[in-house]
Length: 295
Image (tube, rainbow, N blue to C red; front, side, top):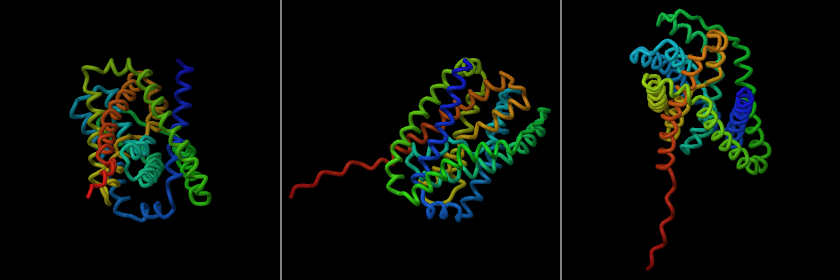
């Protein structure tokens, strides 16, 4: 199992880097400038991801009366924005991939700073009695290495070597797609017992609802055309697992109950977000051109 765990971690790293690299190959400086110059969009995205969704996770956990391990896992996930699956969902739904990737990197960077204080505030208010202390520098470095750097390299290639960027994009997208499927399969195979153990509890439903409501919140608290708004919804619906895993290791001594709940909530969240993006993609497909009418 240790070997499989290492292989899955390696594939996950490749997936994140390839997804961000492919997004960078499609981005332009002018498009990014348009995203970051949209102050209302930035402010609404920050409010949705840094405030509303963490409170939503707390509220769902309290409403369902989740056991301690599941409640902690749900709060950890809700408080950690900027998951790399967000850029993938933007591609799946045929949305605004550039805006989605840019917002994802921004949220992951800021989230590495706000994660611990947010979790501490919620767990203290909920009277869980646990403090979370993380190496913020390590989180920032991880985000920079796995998300920001590949995206920047792709962006630079698009700007200064566009033919190369166009030639490389199909391969990068293919690697992203294949590793995405491997990661999903690995998550299912590696945590199916944890998921089964939570049947009969409300943890799976809580993770599903958190993702669906977060998709709605991210879409509603956004500006611009529909494709950009639903892209922001997809980015909001999938959270960044890195800080959550670090917190479980440092603050909860890798408790199996918390790890299992985290895996189950992540999977149920994807089960909520992925079909929404797939449905949007089907609605956005360009219909085949109608045959010319005979005169």
